[in-house]
Image 1 (tube, rainbow, N blue to C red):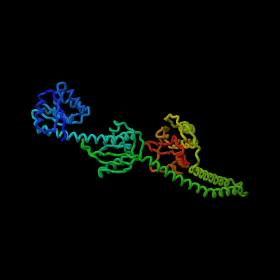
Image 2: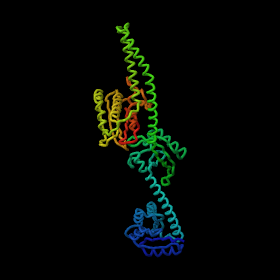
Image 3: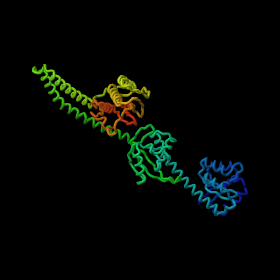
Image 4: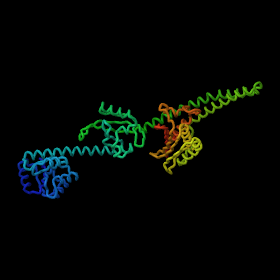
Length: 485
């Protein structure tokens, strides 16, 4: 039979003698020791040499409550049973609230009640130790997980979040604990559907949705969640693991984009060949007609021929632009300071901006780090996007804000305007050849821009704002050996 080491902490020796007599009437498995001061009691607790402690409420220098508080704050996991000379409900409740295993009145102690109290206290302490060990293990897994983990409830209240989650959503812990989960869902429909599925199924896997960070960065994610009962607060909470699929989605989008470009290039070349021959024949016929002696001096006919010839030339030029916008050309890659490229692009459209009475503001990330790119192509792409912003504004005050930042090996350029924006139904079409909502526009500018950035392993995306649009251009800071030509 395993010995149970019991320590009595009591400054009265007579009480020790009485307590020892009670133990003599109980099972011999108890081994009673005694210290007679507060200091010796704390020292013994810190040494962790006993299985259970009996602590008198009055200890001279301090009270048993003081000792109980100090012991718990020092990490004591062994059960502490409070003893007092007379019953006091206030002391009883205070001791139990602080963490005492039990509370006994000395005059009412008998062998049976003391044995039962010690046995229950040890059993309870064992359960608490196991629970704490499990919590520590869970906490270690929780904090060290690479994926964000969020603990919330049906109402959306956030109880906890791990370090990866704080980094992902870019919040301080104190900030995000004040938020509702609606704040991290990009749209309310996903948030509501998530709650409905959780309540109906109790768990879910691979729930795909868009989440948003404190800086309004939108991530395409997959959520896996399950319900667990919080035994402390007796509430059901959702444990949700966030898998960021943005990289995978970007690869898929890039693959689709490359596929579209390949098809566009094939169609453009084929169409160009089909149109070039008839146009050449038409132009040749027009030249012959214009030189015919019977009509050479007929100004009316000659003017009509000029109109036909002019429009043939326009069709031919439009075809050439289309082919050029879909062609995959070899890049002349060199290292350039991206800020210099941005400033040159702005300089090229400065007169246009001034002519439209537009207020231009800039906010650049100052960096000497150079980017591997084809300078003329990237500059032209930036010029095209800025011109697009200029043309999008119709009402004063007209404003354009150009910003840049560096993040995760990518350089991001933002071109923001306060124009009319893009109709949501047109978002997927704006990079398609010949699509435009503007008068006298070819609809090839953004198509060409997207192709240039794709060949640089970069991207261009539209972000709709409450007023106006924001085009985000991303270019790798350095990606040697992986460029697509």
